[in-house]
Figure: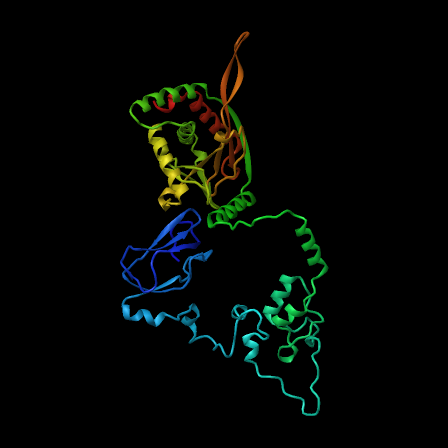
Length: 434
């Protein structure tokens, strides 16, 4: 399993694009790999023949570096790997299967066999020559130290899953050892298991939806963020009346030249980048011995997809116009939803924006996206009556944004300065394009 992105530690095999025995050229796509960010193509680094697919489609959370397939140079060598298994690589240094069997191998024994394969290979107990009759089965003997009943690893696992105790069971394995079939035949669910079953039965019917690799990684990182980063939150209200007017004017101009359409979020991206240039302390990340401050504002934009939350990046946003930012964000969002983001599309971000305004959300707090120090949560625009001086009042569009900060990197006053800078650009949008 190759590392297809800088943050990838494991991947899932979505689909194999080549079949066993098929010729492979350098650069050919071997498989689709679902990573922590997107579904990416695993390319062959050299030419040859795909001799063996070790891990099938659907294999989940395969660690980087684990063998997934075998490529050989000559077509005649393909047949030599027809019965290959990963354990074949170290049979010369490992005990033979007739001498030792792991619990994992024992777990592969077909259900219903009376004795696990390891137990079947054990020598039968010596018959008692002084007795004229065979003793009947007895409860599994305890070890001399009285620690626990004698049972195979598989039997213990099955007992745990069934919520039953091994005490008092009659073992049919060698030396009275309790084996898998004994647990299946003699299991008596514990009171706790019966209670749990009754509680489960009280719930309505449900469907268990498997978590994608993206969702698992996202969950792990968000949990890590909340547990290890000291968050604090600052909110500010921005008058976006002038921004809305400028957006409408620019969209009319763009429509005449078929140049697309600007969104409020495009202005937010640009204003955030410019505010980071004014207050670079927020464009930083925490390290134990130093705080790293970045010289460019690379803005991640949160995009919701059917696979989970993705955060593609708009690099060097300070130097880009609104139309360019709009085009890039649309293209990145489309690639994210199709699962076609490349490592360059989501790597190197220094600040993140999460916008739920299009869903009617007025205000919310986002979780910092490590190793970044800040994330901006953007709510939707709403009308508000404001004073124009004296007894004159008018209705103006406003928007509430909340900055989540890592207190190790950004002090409260610094976060407030950044919000003031952001507010200045949003309320005077012409300053963004000067």
